[in-house]
Length: 194
Ligand code: URA
Image (cartoon, rainbow, N blue to C red; front, side):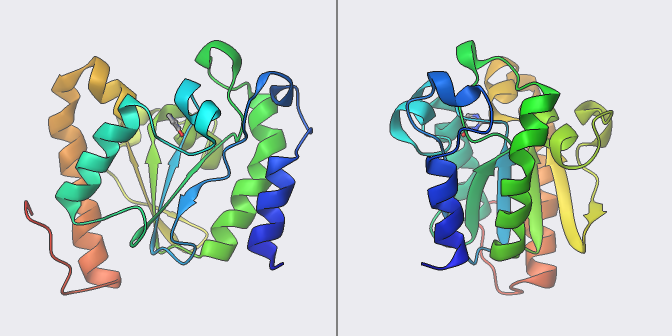
């Protein structure tokens, strides 16, 4: 078993924090393990916990539409992960302690997948990876350099579902990702809408 699979096993049996008590399934992440683009959300919700897969509920359906508009798909350009691997009860935001306990898994996943571009979905992903005081409304749409990678924070799809007026800004952010992808990964990349 290589290290990528070892981490999967560790996550699937993890009891490092109390989130393990109420979970049905930890969510390791999904996609191409050599993906040039990694997408990071907050943590599993109800459906993700039931299925053990990231972004399979309503937010996931919207995310897949956005990926399709970008010419991306989960099994080719993308790997999707989360800040915490187990569902917080009632979908509450994970605590800073839960995030701190879980983040080493994500750091190692990032090193092994080695994406050139990281998309952070929402406030928890931004705070968890970059800076606990960062504000998504201030930082979205701007590239951050982090450990030699290009990081784009944008709104979480659940925010777009709650407030469709934010979709326009989110699409501007994803257009920047498409541009960067053409610049540093594949100049021929085709997307229908940009
Ligand atoms: N929301 C997230 O942040 N992550 C998921 O995997 C699903 C919903």
